[in-house]
Structures are given as C-alpha cells and as structure tokens.
Amino acid sequence: MNIEKIKYFIDLVECRNFTETAKKNFVSQTTISQQVASLEKEFDVQLINRKQIPIEPTKAGWLFYGEALVLWKQYSHMKTKMVNFHQDHFLSLEYSAFTDIQQLLPLIPTFKETNPHIRLELAKVMLKNISEFLQKGLYDVAIAVDSEFKEKDGIQTHSLFRGKYCAVVSHQHPLFNRDAITKEELYAFPLVMLNATAIGNSYYLMIQNAIEDGYEPNIVCTVDDVETELFHIITENLIGFFPENYRLAYPKEEVQLIPLKDSRHTYKIEIAYLKDNMNPAIQPFIEQLRHWFSQ
Image 1 (cartoon, rainbow, N blue to C red):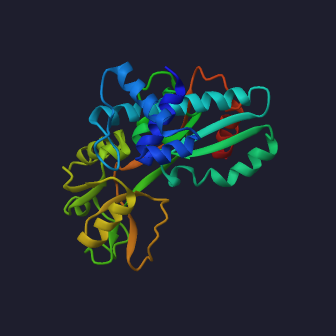
Image 2: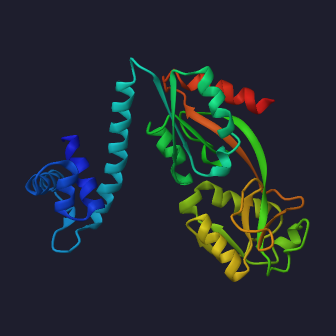
Image 3: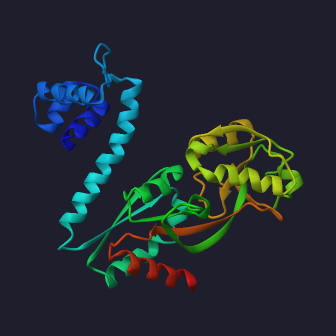
C-alpha cells in the first residue's frame, strides 16, 4: 500500500471535500478520488459517504482514520529520524498536562546549551494515549503520572517528583473558606472528574484512593477536559481534583485550590522511554533531568 494514499485519506476526512484535499496535496480531485477508492477496494469496505455534503467517513472510515493517523505519524517520525541520522540528534517528548512539565521547562535552556547537537520537540497528547504512543515509537520520551506506565511492556521509568491533589471549589461552595479539607468533608459533597477517556488509568486510581480512604466517591459528572470541569465546579458547586501546582486562570476570590488532610490523593511524575530505543539523545536528557530533580 502506498503511504501517500493514507495521507490523502486523512486530509479528505479533515478537509471534508475533494476540492480542498486536492489543493492541499497539489494533485487533481480525480487522483484523490481514485486513491480513496483504491483503499476501499483493498480493504473491501466503504470508507467515505460520498452522498453526504460535506463528506463524512463511514463507521469503518472513522476506524481507518484513527489507525491511519498513528501510521502516518510513525512514518513521519521515521523520516525525521533518518534525515537527522547524520546530523543533529532529534528527541521527541510527549506530555499530557502542563503541570507535569512546568518544573522542567526552566531547565531546557541549560540542557540545550550543554547539548547543542540535540533538538527537542514537545507535543501534548491525551493522558490515556501516553504509554501507547511511546510503545508505538511515536515519541522518544514521555512525562506523566506513574499510573500510566504501570505494567507496560518494554517501558523504563524514572521518578522526577511527587505531589498532592487539592480540592477545587468555587466561592459559593460551603468549603470555600477552609484552609484544609478533611476526608469526611470532601466526600460529603458531589464531585466532578475528568473521565477515563481523558485521563486513562488515573481515573480508576482516584476512585481506588477514595475507597482506601474509607469512602465511596459521589461522582455526579465526568468531563473530557479541565475547562469543562471548571465550568461545572463554578456553575454547579461541584468539587474537582487538581494537582497542587495547578495555576488557575481565575481570581482566588472566585475559585480556590484547598489542601486535603490525610488523603491518599497523591501523584508521582515519571519520565519514561522504551528500553530498546537506540536514540543516543535519550540518556543525556534523562541523566540531566534526574540530576536536576535530585537536588
């Protein structure tokens, strides 16, 4: 299968019409149509609903699109690696939350000064995809909570730092003026959390921690992102969980992070990489990070 066919299909799904897809790839609409038809023939399934405007993938098409994205990223990553093989070393780093890397960012200039031949590229991905993308070779290094790397084949990890989760409440909540919140107080109120689709194993770990604290959490709402979580915290007076180093985009008079007393809701941030990844840029980066965080 020609890899360009995959690129044409991805662009067609994202552009949603043949004209824009053809322009983007500097080919004719006929070429795009023929290449997509070729894919459909190869897999014996209809990928695009051509009767709908704008164009919409079929159920099989959406499945193919998801797999095609991964394959195209792998191919692009391979091309970059080959281009840089005799030049500068290239190191790709994935993360899922700014709080995981904010302590790292001030250290990057020093690393680049001492390692001018290593080029870094940063990419934000969903937490549930962190270990999968690492195992598939889409990225060289990952930084995330340790729960996402547990029992994952071929992945080596090193601990960077630990932290605690805080309760997040709006100014209308009865607990807003507390300096700290007890477990009894926390679980007496309804909660909002990021769902398992967004944060993977961390969702179930939070529930497990609550049960080990001796309580069944009353999760009345799960959401896809932090912005929506904050919306429910403010408008519905729900309690959310954020890392203690999270920087709220709201004044303290409106929303607050409040420490939890004697809670199991803690986290550990790790840096991870594949054991068999031969990229020579990995070890200098890992060693310097471990040195920084050990001080």
